[in-house]
Image 1 (cartoon, rainbow, N blue to C red):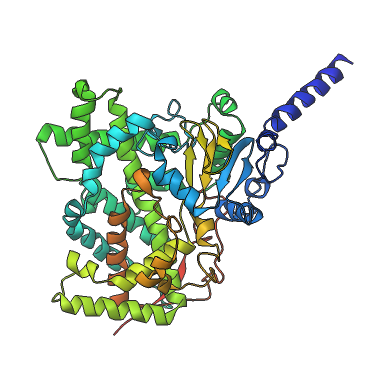
Image 2 (image 1 turned 180 degrees about the horizontal axis):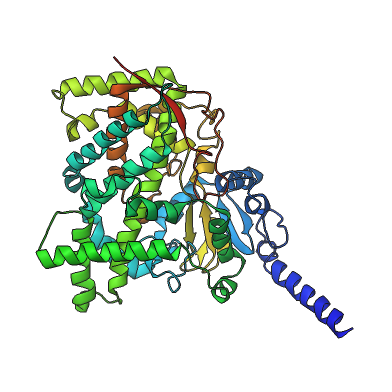
Length: 498
């Protein structure tokens, strides 16, 4: 009898805990999507039936005609923004209210998570000021030649992998390329050390970002109960991969310091930040430790290859499906090459205006990441009585904006002309956000586009891209991944151009 009573009480408490937050938006008189016990509005995502972007798109459409709508990510209340003007205020005009990303991370269990993306307030601002000079166009111009060498290595690997039917899965080769580029350009590694599949960097990089049910469950525990996550001792990434990365970056930095090596890359700026913020603590009003420097090296490595590789995959996919667009890009590439006497230099890249439009359209249709903000101080919505409380999670889904026919008519059609100067001028601000916007936008936008333009230019000069029997039409996505990625790789036909 006592056992039965205990079980009943336990179930009641569990039910209460699972539903205790679900009256939040009702109390605020904010329109919201009714949640399901424990899962909130993300049951199908949790079950692996849809990907993150599709889950947000469904909720976004349920808020039709509204500036924002209340949702629940598991047990966590979030405000999903739909209005570009309000999004612009959050990201730029009223940024001081929304300075922190608010993304889930546990810097205690995973110290390498305490990097620029997750750092807060003053600590973030100081670190960004130290690192951002590494990403100016002038500095990135010096990285063009090593990036080109990595892209030439890609062509060699494509040729090696072509079978009798000229059909290959380009996914792994593009991941290798992006890993090589960030390794060589960002950390001064030798190309020979990282260009083979069994290299420690490739193994660790794939292990860190491999989509799986376990990875997804770890992510979801943040939104169920951060306290529960600490009790069961969940870490953000596999410990062996993290251990390798930390040792590798420490070794690289120690070697540079002992041998007075300066290359003007990310490592050099991190070492300067270490000197200014960790050794000479008088320069910073907040505390920095050496692990913060290592964490940022880790962040730039991880952020530098996955999203870029996936964007290239989708770009090549659309070029294969749209021969007229592919021919247009190829013609532009050959004309720009001829104009610059066969040299693929920085000025050559500046001539590729149509390819820039193709990349933008790819990012519109296959936006890698969502944007989260956390309210730093209470914020009243302009011309409304509603005040967003401190610590409230704000969600902005660029994919949802990019798929809204109000801003992009016939959004499922791949149309680079949307990004002509005339068409861009017609759209409101904050309707194209693949790299975020405002003070916390992505530092790597220019670097990423240099790599993508060089790789695609070199590929199109050698090959005609075609779909094959293994090409997914329409595209299907990996539902267990935390970012938008193709399901089962990216199979295309590479027909050599005589």
